[in-house]
Image (tube, rainbow, N blue to C red; front, side):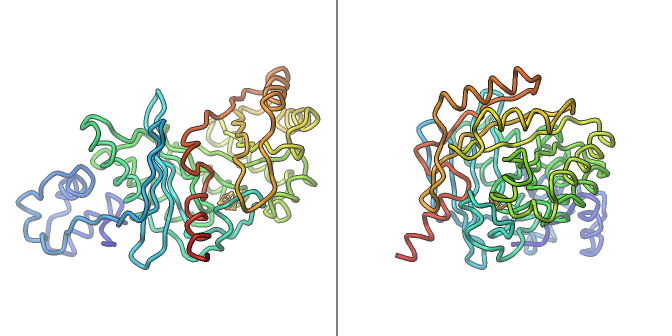
Length: 340
Ligand code: SF4
């Protein structure tokens, strides 16, 4: 893919200077790349260099609820999964940040493929851009409004590209997604949480917690060995103090593993008075493991207990149930079929 999609706005100016055009035309370049405006006169001489890029679409599934799940094929042949979800408040794209993942969470279909390579900022932009184009095919006024880095990969294991991506994504001359509408989710790479707390961009942070004790968390998330809960919560406190922004904790509810009332109590105790919010995600069963989704009664009981304990939480509304909705499931399915 063309390097130009990797350029933050200030580097776009320098890139133009390197190609004999004044930096002041960076605005026109961004509008050409991200708003589909034609090349302005000063950029015409770069028309052979500035080609519109797209990914090829390997598979596209559309759910009855409007969720779109796409396997994009990268230039080097790797397949990555991107999802568009529609909510009453806007359209969310879930972006993949790595080809494969080395974190090795035991419940995750995405992590079955070890990390093959990093996704560049430009390739992340292209995922959003292509989903935005699909929305506009349906209705010209419909746009992507929110972006979450929650697809395949650990965003903080690709830190620099993810930060560059947020800078390009939020720029007013580009797609101009509001920083408050962007969420980056990490399994808990502590030094990067501390670094992220000091970035200028006010985008949201979500932490995949999934268990309230070290024993249980280490069982399902190997990363807990390197960064146990004490270190993680220290970094969370640093982030809260530094940014003043509420933090989200993701908690996948898995039947008979982490979904009991005692787990809700331990979670409430762990989070204490922190300014946070818990997103409860009932597990989507996948063929690669034996984990199961809890009963509706268990989900409600867990939710009620957290609320009683004063922890703000919601149960994530499930979308795309009919189209392999668990993260990485579509790519994993494709891999199974290829292996067969
Ligand atoms: S849940 Fe996220 S961090 Fe864990 S293995 Fe899957 S993609 Fe990697």
